[in-house]
Length: 218
Image 1 (tube, rainbow, N blue to C red):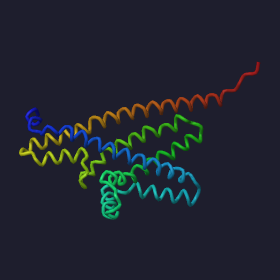
Image 2 (cartoon, one colour):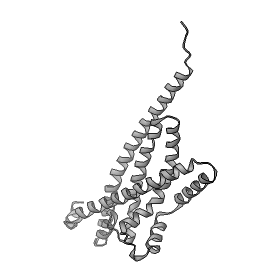
Image 3 (tube, one colour):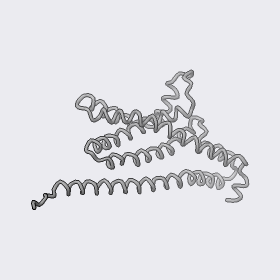
């Protein structure tokens, strides 16, 4: 591995870290837009009849939209003069996933809030964090259209490798650089979600106990 690092150009690590920052930027933009659309759809889904049915149909369609298909549709459907960068196109292609995920989680959160359970409503936060990190990984689709994110930097450097072994080792390093932090983040999210779930359950049990307790007359 030391021999591989010696053969890498000096600017490889700064370029790779800058590329990873692009992945997080794309996911951040997609999440912000997904939150805006997703919460509106969640509110619409709680409405009666036509509005609710239409919102559920839109969410189902967005949930089924493949990121690659949406990305290439935007790339070819938008006029050249639209002024959107590759980063924005990739971010917009992730909005259907983000909005549908937020809409699904938002319905449960709004129902919990209406029932008076603030902790139950807060369970949406770990779900949103999970969606963000999923979109960080999915943003690597930008390499297909020339966006200089982390995976694109790895692929560009791999093309200059003379040895298949070095190429595979470089890919493994890239996977580890993305995978280890993201898996650690998922572990933290699971812990927070477990804690909130237990706190919500204890709150419900306490409320039920208060309702069923009959005061004894002196």
